[in-house]
Length: 119
Length: 114
Image 1 (cartoon, chains in turn orange, yellow):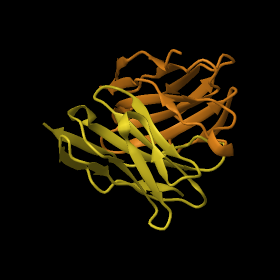
Image 2: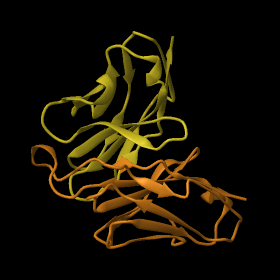
Image 3: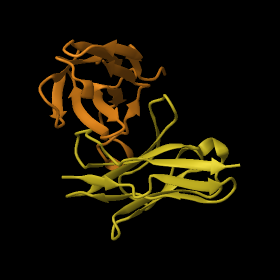
Image 4: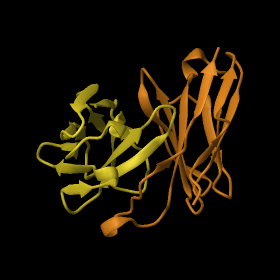
């Protein structure tokens, strides 16, 4: 199976612009989560989508939004970019259903990330 | 609220020696615990997880981790380190349920010296 793919891999934007990042999950995976990774704050959860619905959201301002399409591909959008939005944005996909020993959790598989630089 | 602590920013070990990367967690409820590894300019790769069952979990590339409920720890171990194990390691936790909101530790840079 192909892994999680993210496009573009690198982006340079200026303050005030907006940006859209794309994520294609592993085939058959219906859950897509987004994370922001920065040297100062580490890895932080942004949001999770499942079957086109946002199921959970982290503590980020409303400038960060996302959506999921019927084929499970997901996009995240950041509007009015700030210097502090410079980060590696990681997408992760996970299958639905039951995992080991009756648990309902399956591990997430991460894409290579999109490196966003805001100037 | 859930949290993860990785008390060591950096761990150095000689090739062939055993390695341990420490992780402690805090959650309300039953934890699901994970270890991921990140190589430079790459995403995170899944190593292993604890959901339920045996406290000793075996994962990829010879890594294992021991879940200790009384000490709220989930330390990553490997009996014999390789230079290629040098990378950034993250411990993560979530609570039982369907939400996939991982809380990550700050990461530990492992360097295996030849």
